[in-house]
Image (spheres, rainbow, N blue to C red):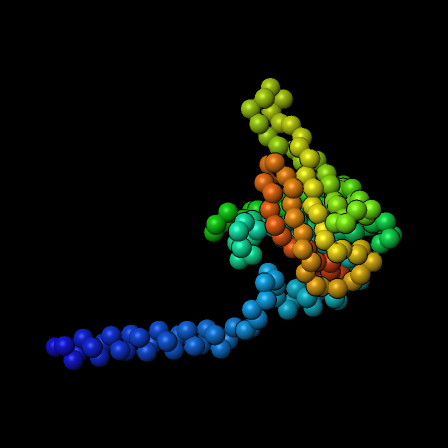
Length: 184
């Protein structure tokens, strides 16, 4: 009976080891600290000739736990861009809630003078006051950001907000991601 139990334990360990090996084998093997994005999104981003976009992800404690994601269209001249917020996604454990914005998109002001460069706006925060809401400032600091550069390298960023808290993060500039507009 002890031999059967030992054999069963050995079989379970072997299956577990094989599963781990298979997972490692089929994973990308990339141990960089950048958030995971699929090659399909990269292909779509490169295929669309629309305006560039800035994708910013902010996380709590580690990059594996994203909490907020902002996506902006860069409009106007890239030397003096306007940033139109397309959506904000909030993650809370196993749930991800995406709040799509509608035109006219909320615009963020871009301050290119200091380093880090700053994106700032005001957000509506719901509260228990008679008015039911108030506005609070929000700022994204972009370190070593150059709006005229088109690349997909992640750069350091940080979010300064009372409502969302101060969070570390990363941003990258992409070509626009194609959307399903019913044409094509």
